[in-house]
Image 1 (tube, one colour):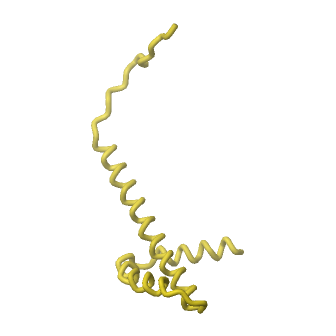
Image 2: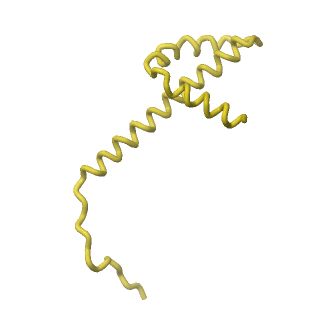
Image 3: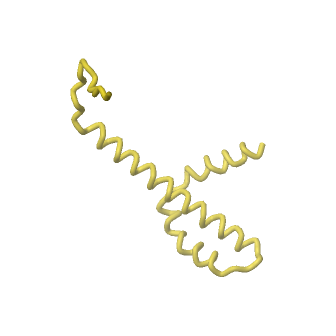
Amino acid sequence: MFEKSLDNIAERILTLDEESMNNLWEKYKKRMEKFDTSKEWEKAVIIFFIINAVRVKNKIFNEQVTQNATKSNSPRKPARDIPYLKRIK
């Protein structure tokens, strides 16, 4: 049940607009830096790290997409009938 709850939270976060979340980053960063023992501070910390998690996820995703596109566009070496092996004694 706990894992299902986390999965549902992640699913909802993935539907949020990244740009809107990025616009809130500074607000929650400042709130997080002003420590107090309130629930509002705790929620601000969680929200700040959720925004960061989405930013990191998107950065990794974009890098991988770019890297895979570059690999698929580069010419491949022709396959050899005989593998290149060197005998070492």
